[in-house]
Image (tube, rainbow, N blue to C red; front, side, top):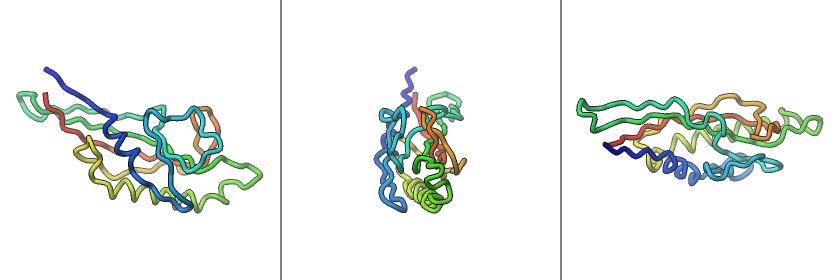
Length: 154
């Protein structure tokens, strides 16, 4: 019995998507491009290092066990810009953040053909507001989750 699970084909497809936000293109990082810190970069969508792949389910579709369905959730974090404190807090960047959240939702919901995925549910956005990069620096941003379904054959 041999089963191949390939999460990276789906993540490569996501990294190849084009997301156009309120003030330009959103840079999409793949799993091999997750930065230790976002630094001064902005408008970055990257796999969330902690909890990137969650809610993994493997479902037997036939009594013989020859066909399986794999379902899982991928979570990305969007970093709009550094939290600037006294130089211009959340409200000065909030409109752009919200516009880019809509752009990310639209790009994910319009792409029904992620290579490697049989289906992807509508994206879910959560936590609009302060987020942290892997180094702990604060950014304005949000998390976006996408439920993926793949068929596997034994």
